[in-house]
Every structure is written in structure tokens, then in C-alpha cells.
Image: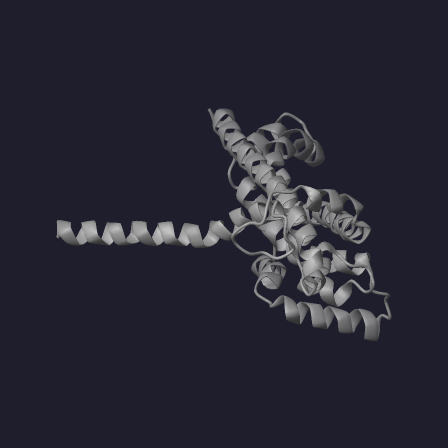
Amino acid sequence: MMDFLRRHTNFLSLFAVCYLLFLYVPVLLLPLFSFNDNIYVTLPLKGFTLKWYEALIHNKALLSAVWASVKVGIGVSLFSTLFGLMAARAMTRYRFPGRRSLYALIMLPLVIPYMVIGVSTLVILRRLLDVELDLWTVGASHVLITVPLSMLVLMARMEGFDRSLEEASRDLGDSAWKSFRRVTLPLVMPGIVSSFLLCFITSFDEYLLAFFLAGSDATLPIFIFSSLRFPNKLPDVLALGSLILMVSIVLVVFAEWLRRRGVSGSDSSVI
């Protein structure tokens, strides 16, 4: 029995190592090839260079696509976090008819293929409403898919602290709004920041909806996919991907720090 468990454990350890290598080695190779003095992604490396990062600064089309994605991501994150906060508070603090049905309706975009959402939204906007496609339409579609994510994060956060703190605030004479602003909001602030970051990353990385609804305004994923056909544009994309990777690592570390701080803060407030 012990031999079986030992072999089973060794197999799981080997599988975990292979899985991590398969997942992260391509990501780690991205910065490596961004310093390669060759427009082709091949080994061995031809030489070390920083010219792709220098060229990135002068690539106006690429920088414009980055700025478009940043604008859409920030707007989507603000609206999605606001809507998600209101929905999470309603689901965790109130009981009303149709609550479960409303919850399922909000969560529905998570299980519908983005291809279906993109095509149906395109038909409604162009054929029925005659709306011009631009970054606003992309942002509206991204809000549709990120509100459920925000709601899940904030519901978990609101369920994670003692509700008696809100009740004590109301008993001491605070109105519902003051109680929310002075008690609930500070306690859920780590969840709000995490929701904002999650919605921003989701919007920044999304391709299918942007492809259908961007019109002539290209976001970064659209620009990258269109650049893959031209080898001379690939090094700039690799350089930008390396910078985005570093920023993503910083955001992940920051979000985890906020999460840990929020958990410890909740524990100390209960004590």
C-alpha cells in the first residue's frame, strides 16, 4: 500500500512539474526573444539588442492600439465594479422575489460563447439601432462580460466579514448610506480593487468582442493578431508583450497583497 501511494505521489509530482513547464516556459521565452537580434523567433539567438524596444516607442499604430485598450479597460473596470458592487450588495444583504433568477441572468454571459455574444450584439447595434461601431460599443460589450466577474469577487468579499458591524452602525444612528460608506465600503475595498484589476485585465485581453464591435478603432489584441502575418512586426509585439508581462506580474503581486491585507483586516476587526 505504501509503495502504491509513493508511486502515485511521484506520478502526481511529475505531472505537476510537466504542467508548470508547459504553462510557463513559453511565457518566460517571450522576454528572451524580445532581446534577440533577429525578426524570426528561432533558436539559437542571433545576438542581444534593445532596438525592438526603441522601435516600440516610435510605432504610433501600436501605441495607439495600446492606448485604446487602456481607455476601454479603465472605463469598463469602473462601470463593471460599480454595477458589480450594487449587485453583490443586493444579493448578499436583501431577500426579494426572483433573486435566484436574477443571479442566474447576471451570470449568464459567463457560459455563453463570446462568438455568440459578439454576433448578436453586432446585429442589434447595426441592424436594429443603427449605432456606429467604435470603442464605446466595445466597452459596452466588455461590461456585459465583466459584471459577473466583479459580482462574484465582491459577493465573496461581502460574505467574508461580520455583518454585525453593519448592524451596530445602524443601531448607533447611521443611515443606510452612512453605514455603507463608513463601515461596508472600507471593509470591501480590497475586493473593489481586485475587481477593478480583474475587469481591466479581462477587457484589455479580450479579442472576439472587440473584433466584431470595434469598427475602425483597433484595440491591442486586434492589432497583435493582424501583425502576426508580417514577420517584421513581430519583434515589436514581443517587446510590448514583455513589458505587459512585467506589469501583469506587478498587478498580480499587488492584488494578492491587498487580498491578504483584507483577510487580516477582517480577522482583526472580528477580534
